[in-house]
Image (cartoon, rainbow, N blue to C red; front, side, top):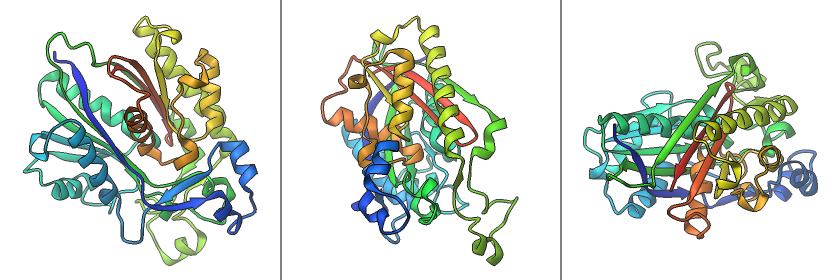
Length: 328
């Protein structure tokens, strides 16, 4: 069995910005109300015609540069997203074409906001088994197309963005490796966050569009409670399996959905807030992209350094959840 290391990270947020003050003109809300309840100040939006694979391409190029690799080094692409360019083919295939990877296997993974941790876990297993040596793992979303800007429950939260990791087989005796991952799904909570239309259950029709079935719908209070519970459960399992205490963790990198959720999880384990990577104020909830974007931001500004012990934790629609412990 081989071990897996993170060779390079990259991220990309579109130039267009939607601030809380912009939202005040669209829906009954205020900058203060949003900041107090979510910690979000702004979110980024893809330009007209800018697709999920376009955002992923930018993040992937930066990750490859950080890893000192080229597209020719990639053996596989795993793409976490629920807002792909089209229903088919996979957005991973469009990314493959843009990167110029020759015949690299590429596929999408739909686990909503947990998509990146799920994808990274699968990549680690492929490398551990010796099937592939270098894998590009991407989390990217263009969520604003699925947001009803008359629905205060959702429109204050979501933005667009992309993050990418290049993960590769570690050298012998390399301590900076992925140590373990833990995934969870609670299907009984599937109705808490849904995108009703567009699948086989509710194909798109004029009637569905008139009813707003193509927009996300969320039960915010229930999401908050269950997000804290599932993320905490995954963190607890990870720490226990690795015989690690909370004080041993250099950085907690949680899904950037809502600062209050991150704060509650940190409080449960005694993580000081200064050890929690938090950039939700800058980008809002970008679903599968939040963890790789937050991680890459912290690498580039010097907070996350090689040799540090990092805990990732996430939750998403499904209800899905996961955590991963790694030494960067």
